[in-house]
Length: 275
Image (spheres, rainbow, N blue to C red):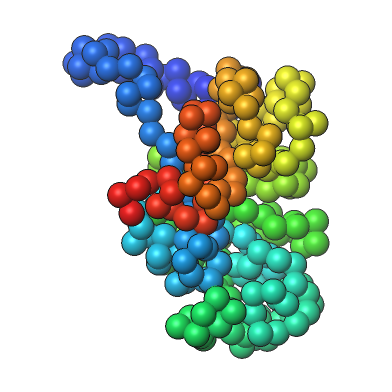
């Protein structure tokens, strides 16, 4: 059974008999429904991905969440970078796990996006938690956790130290393509919502979705495999669905029509035109 179902049932029961019930009853669930706007690696369309500049831009654009990618340096520091090498997004070369934190921190992670971003650094996980928790939701992706044995425990420790192991309003979510890693995270942090990432239709069968629901709260597919039937299936077993990565208005409009729960995008303004 999905770990959020009992909580949801309790909330529904409370609302049913609350004084506000008659007011809410006048509106449909569809009218009240909101799609979460998740800034992918920050507002990566407008600033260098996974940097403070990108995350600050996402907050400025009123995103509901920032999505971050967590890896680990050679000497054990949790850092925020997407690729398992630094080659694409910095002026350095080499694998993240082969470089010390000092070496990673010395790299320029902004100039590739534009001279105005020169000097942007690879942030630490601790810095992101301290700077943004309470200001915006944080969707934490464990990037290639199989390369970093024990990274789940390290992430759990950082969250627990900040009392984020019992997040309010699901403002901390953890996700990965590595399903075994997510099972570990669910055991370590049972009150934190867990998401599974996939781009494979093999993971959309009723049997696969049921298995995911035993430890995860979100099923997060690439938008290329999203259908209305898939969204309905995910919702029918008590899970939510977040889809990625939106880089066009057409993709955003499609996912809005599909009735997903969250849209993960490089361009937050494609989801929320107020920005």
